[in-house]
Image 1: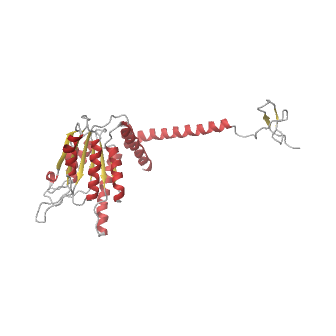
Image 2 (image 1 turned 120 degrees about the vertical axis):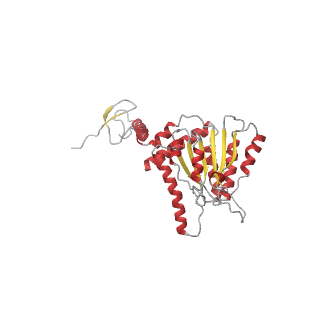
Image 3 (image 1 turned 135 degrees about the vertical axis):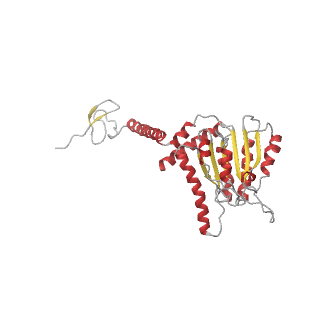
Length: 322
């Protein structure tokens, strides 16, 4: 005996009865769609999936907030006001590429120009890696509130940045060429809690030719990190390499060792620190540096929102990857 067709509802006349094989209403002859998932149910199912995804994401973020100090620090900063104090440290040691330095100078100048007329903003620019040992290798380039007009900015900021150059000494000059990177961090971070500190460097510490060598300033970095409104941002190129492959591996290892040590402190919630590698391709450098400085030195509320959203997402992705 044949199994009866399942009951169906005719949307035209309201007839409820067995569905004929021709998919037409037995009463009025109107066509009836095949039985299946109603369109409204399909829409509701899609909405349900979307809600579940949002709920799962929110749950994951809440879990990371309580289990990962790095993520918690970034989430806490979302509602902080726009930063108004910036510090830029620039490595001018002989191993730095002139092309990269020139592009950095142009980008920093253009970024700081955005603050002309805003007296609430102040910034300092210093170089390190000049001839000499210890603090003698440091030089203050700019230390000012943002100028009120373009002409003041030109002589007070732009022209001074333009004079920054890679360290060179005469052949008979016996002044040691050093890169006291650790001492620079120790000195500059000591009084800049709550500030944006942006440092351009290959992250190589070299004061071996000096009477006194300095160690990694962990205590000063930790103290700087107690104010979570501040952050330490490194823009770093690939270090100077040679034809000696073994020496190159040691050099790259030293750079990565510093990065790993700082990131470990970050994961422990001791400091907010970010590293951005400058491309080796000269054609990609200028756009990369400009983009990173827009984030590091936000000039508008859009810049602030964009930068903080990016940092939160990056930190969450890093936490998930472990």
